[in-house]
Length: 149
Image (cartoon, rainbow, N blue to C red; front, side):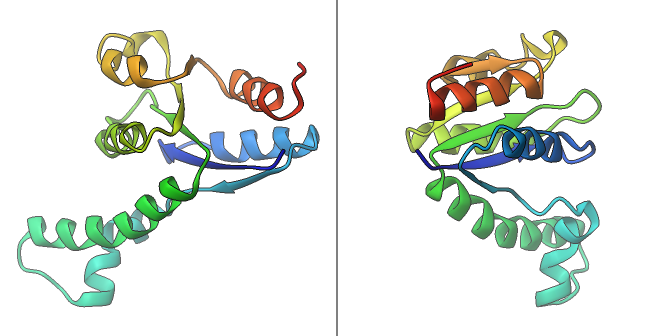
């Protein structure tokens, strides 16, 4: 079985690389998709391509719309969407990704610590699995593809 997995959420740690490396070590046939993880480029892409804006709202709006082209396309192509909510920042965009993926009936795997359980209860309720770390995600992907642990 070959899967397409979109890795959404927190961009300040290397959790994506950990999942990809561990899945490669397990020889899992997965094509991984992700948003742009260069924070500065992601924030400024709109004005870098379409021109400077005087107001921060329009600066952010241009960037969000261009990033949405990649995000929505990737979520639509994916079989599974993994979304990590980190400890330090509020990932409102990740919550939006979860809602969008859920509306498309994608299989959701959520990663967060216990501290965020209450704040993410609606997101968790839409997920097929709520995990605490990348190892649990890799085990779920391995089970899904190979039927083994």
